[in-house]
Length: 631
Image 1 (cartoon, rainbow, N blue to C red):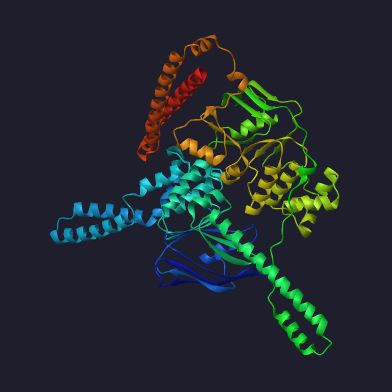
Image 2: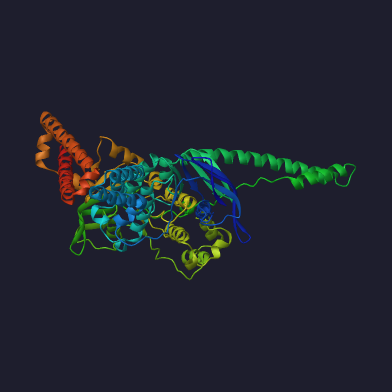
């Protein structure tokens, strides 16, 4: 039951329970959320996280317990699916200030009345009314609302042109971002978010992390984005086995605490099992003898004992230990001055990339940069309009797409694995168990599976194909945290080569040994995982263009001549390094100007700045090529 309480700044939940029929979803859920706190709510798909949030809001009735919300304090909830009004994007975002805008209209009306009023006492009354209206307008954020709308809209990837577009013209993913923007602009005392990073690219997620970190209200977030949880929250609440357990700290600290808790639980379990075994032996020996009364007493104690239950251990994906893929050439895949276009629109222009055997490559970049297009070039789904795409000898490519076309919708899960790969039922169940298909789950019809279940099954099938080069398009989409961990374990065990596009930074951190960034039509390589890439991006040390070795190693007589004169070479390098440093400073200045909301109020200025930025980027890339040539 939701009711308004007296404890200011604290949302209190006590003994909340919910069941559907005879199936208990959760029970005895209790916690507090204070203004300024950020908490993450995690748990496997189907454990009841979204239902719990809806019970907190009073959108669903809990079977037991209570929720107390401070009187007069506001709550906003961003669902995964919601509805939008009519009008433009700007109109929709302004709806968060409906009351303030009404006060603004009252102020305009009062201004007209003051100008027309000739009676002094009447004017004084109108001025007093105007002063009160102006105070309400200021307290409601009336003087900042336009800047706040633009700040949030631009942070979530919208432009000035988007603000004027009708809501009906936006895609499903864009509408999800609109729901999020609307809630952030309202600035409620308590904000509930359900998977807020869905449909955001990495840049938008990083902006949201910074925004929420400085947010003054209480925030409760359902998320499977572990990197996001690490950055934002100070508390993790896990819904597991129908109960809520609270851990202090971010996601990484939660993992440490849970490991300690599981170790303690395992130790207690072993001691209890030892006690049970000794007690049962005592009962067996004395139940019919002179100590039968004591034996019956111990049997009663044993019957009343609350047994410790350990979570079931998951099967490990050990397929590659027995079935390693065929070894292929050292140069697994190459793009050589490759161009890709859809009709007249050029997406990738003369890009070059070399993927070597054993590489685990993360391909990153903003939405619309052409990452999926690059994947389609490698898989042959799209033909290059210029340049070459080469796969090395003995390369067997496996492709994971978001559509999962390789699944037979009418088949059972178990049959899909047994029949297609000629595996025994025992082996098939073992591999399915590693991807969280347990018990009767293996008898489900594939067409009736959820999106996450289909993704798990499709990924398992990919692992069993014998491919030695995997091309992965968002492999962790729709997956909860346990499923993501299963995918990560399989990829870490994979002895071949892979290229992955993903917005899941935690996943990229764990599996990638190389990051290739696609931005402004250029590829830049960083040797390391995602965290290393971010450090390099933030620091002064720059990465190198991602060109194949063959191109970089071509002999140039002029370069050879320079290499014979060390003093000239050093002088030229210093000159180039100074020019590069100067260009980087100029780019930083342009970035600041581009990110300034004031620059977005004039489309002409915004376009000019973008053009200058692109030109400087190209000039910087050319200088880096010169610098590399001198090495």
